[in-house]
Image 1 (cartoon, rainbow, N blue to C red):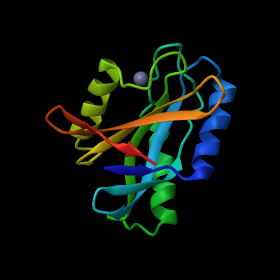
Image 2 (image 1 turned 90 degrees about the horizontal axis):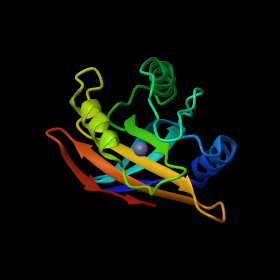
Image 3 (image 1 turned 180 degrees about the horizontal axis):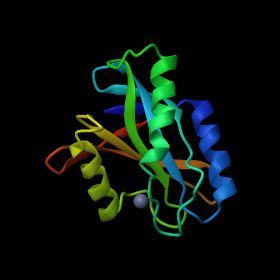
Image 4 (image 1 turned 30 degrees about the vertical axis):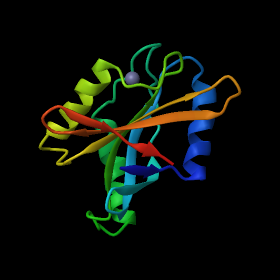
Length: 151
Ligand SMILES: [Zn+2]
């Protein structure tokens, strides 16, 4: 699966990562279906409460309003524009998802309220020269996962 991150969203992430320093930050990803196995990140939220050095906990309430606004703006075309997944930073670690990350993503895809049949996790960090590094993993129900390609 290919996940396209447009330049504007990448710049938004870089700015937020610089501001957060060594604290983990994150939010949700809203995406557009482009073609089979190809999605584009259209919007991302940045949760106001940052995490600690090694964890980021998404507050469930923080996603409802941005999602509703996104659905409104995109005309409720749920098959084209929908929740895509989650993102957070690993300022001090590699961009590989941790086992805690994997478990919480499997919880998301198994949650009937979310209603997603897959969810993307984007983990990002700034490298030594403050360029954005990122990796995407796609989570499926029944504890399956596979690597995606971030473009
Ligand atoms: Zn993590």
